[in-house]
Image (cartoon, rainbow, N blue to C red; front, side, top):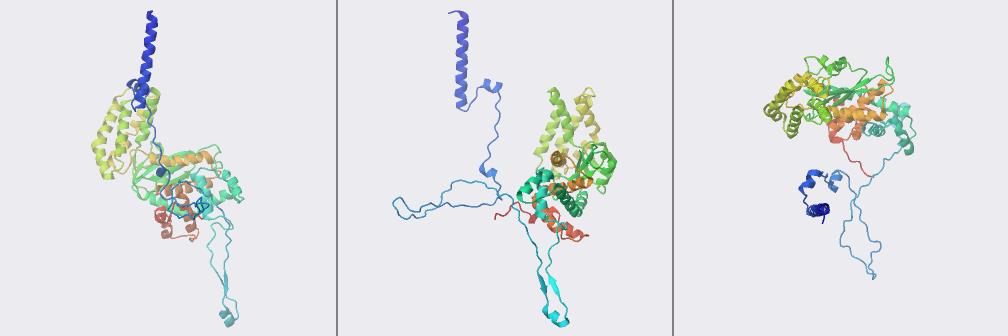
Length: 471
């Protein structure tokens, strides 16, 4: 047999044997080393069980299905032995609207009328309307705000849905409702801010926003939404949004006036006007992102990025520790890593305008603020919590796009504060808005602080429920 035919036959036999072995090993739960090296197997995400798909607090309705004919094939009456489980399913009952007509019963005192000859008329005291001369109710406003602030559905896209449900609303009407109710809960919003500024540690961020009819500015100009929030370890957290027509540091001064504690934020220069009364802590996540951008471009992981990854891995392991224990861990374990990181930054050579050079410049510019994370166990390594809150606003903004007027922008900030603060306290935002409007609408114009304190989410928490009764 010629040599080339023998070579071809041998190669074919070897490939066939190798394929057969691979199939046998795969059927027995094993893999050949060659297959593993060439094509690394991806770990599949485990399937969710039925218990993981359903919340524990969902109401349960049990249905028993009887036999159509409770007689045997011979006509004898059947005796019940028990039940047999068939399946478990989930139903949804769409929201229902109904009209409530409110009357006040009228009374008269016949005895008094006989005594003095005058009519003495009395009547029941109906609760004040949420908005004068309006059909709006707390539950209706809560549903509108649920769709806008939580589901990201702008007001004009809600109109068809309300019309199909039987309520002929206009965008102007809904917008006015949202603004007027925001003015109604503004005292609670101000109280949330006071509570927030009394805390020792805060996190902050800001993002551009568009307001069309901003006085003295074009429709294309930028306004801003600022967020200030409690740290993740706070027992009574507040997430506060504030609208501003500028990104100036003067607004930062106004926003954080009266706050003498520790603020974690990014390297934006506007925060420099806060002065020495506030201790600024940097965000290591911002630093890592810039080094990771360099890695995505060059496909080479620098020592600095490796050290940053180690730092965040340690922080994940310490998440369950109390603040004092986490501070001790940082001083003993994290501090050497940070010192090693700065030593590498001081000696690495790169061009100042490439990605690595820009990452180094940003890190060195924030060096003092970044190192302050070693002084506190309460503050996180990153400012991601406030950025997640800002992301909620940005995602909503991508749907409703802009505010027509500054009043609309202020109303958005108030309602997003109410929604995100409720979520941070572990209660349902829709139920909280309903309760909040029910209570605040009945308070006097200048309500006492004690009455407003009762409206804060952690004080209404016991009355909130995520379960709606089934009729």
